[in-house]
Length: 109
Image (cartoon, rainbow, N blue to C red; front, side, top):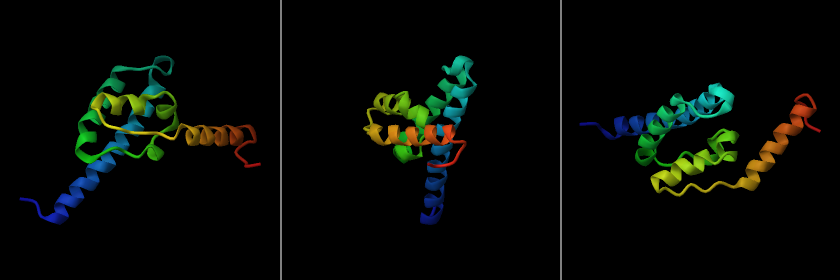
């Protein structure tokens, strides 16, 4: 049987794995034909759906913007019946900030 320290370590590892799965899903979408959806995306979505009920929702602030902007993060949680609200106004502000830096060559105004 695991002691409390081992259980905490396992829980931390699972939380980290879930965050990595979200990143991998973002990367898989970028690699998919025309930035769409692929079998790799399906596989990662299924893994996210297995981990989320075990460790809880990954905060939206830790999720890649396109997954939020396209509603994928929200849909996956809705499929699980788990509430995962996203401040889309804040997401839009972050996107605007990123786009502004891109126009200025990475330098803030």
